[in-house]
Length: 458
Image (cartoon, rainbow, N blue to C red):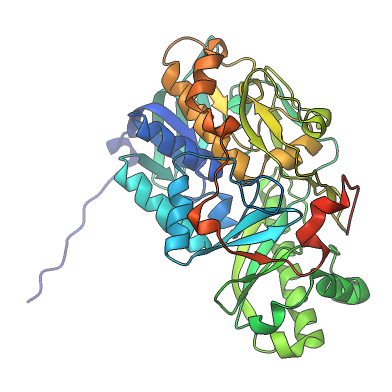
């Protein structure tokens, strides 16, 4: 007779909350957080990484973004500006056929397969001995005199505690300064999010020749009939597949759980409506198409810190290099402030703008540095700096600062030593072997920089 397992009685009192101790705790596992965690591990730090989502990868995976922006300099040749441990991601994606280079708005972006990103991230985290804590919500910060000592987490299995010497907040919402009672900033006019989607069984041989303007014209003509709100946005063929990436929705992203859930539902309704429209008006390409992946509600901006320095639109537009610069990009100002469209300010081939380390340092905390879209910047300035390229670089700078300054205040960092350690993200430009071929946009989007510093374009 088979022997089946028995049962025992358990109580929460019998299972004390686990305590994880590390040199560095990273909150958020998206572009900035993953970069920070892997860079810190490379430098010999013991690292824990916390993410509210059940999987690692942040919005790069959960929101099905599918594109990496802000890596390259403007111009006809793909010259990469951001370097670090994430170089391995690009090399692996291209080696496995899970990425392609695309020319848009006078620069280049990388298309990628979200699942491939997730697997690379998981494998690297496991290999590096980083403690992964997905599905964990930060609910309390323990601090003394501006020094964060521990985070109390809530998980499906109960509470947990993380103690660390240094913390990198790459949550996107500045959750550590927020729970520590620090002053934060919010945009007076909320910045909109998007629900992205991947369609499959599309006749991509036809879609590859469709300009974006074709989709935009259909939405303008029939959008009211289908309940569509956004009149323009990217539509990318996933190279070598019968899949199409859609970024044609706009939703509110309230900082409240039920509201954000409803925003996601509304965004997925818009995706369904787009597919219905394309099936009717472009049947040769979309007759058999269906939604393969609905992304989560993708958030572009919520809260930002009050930092030692504040990045303005003028800083971005002039390209002035601050004395504590640690990262750079040429990505346009891409402000999603109106349901119908997006404001683009595209820069010329000679333009570069920078991120100061001071914008990553919350004023009232000494051992916390933020990276990603919660740095101190005006909404329109952040609309350029929040994309993945500079987020990778900010993650590297945050981890490096934590390594160089292991005691005392991060506000007293040796700026020259930090800049020397991340110097290739300030001065080096790389033309990669995998960047030999690019899929060009059809239409004016490919040469956006040639149109000058533009206002709203739809």
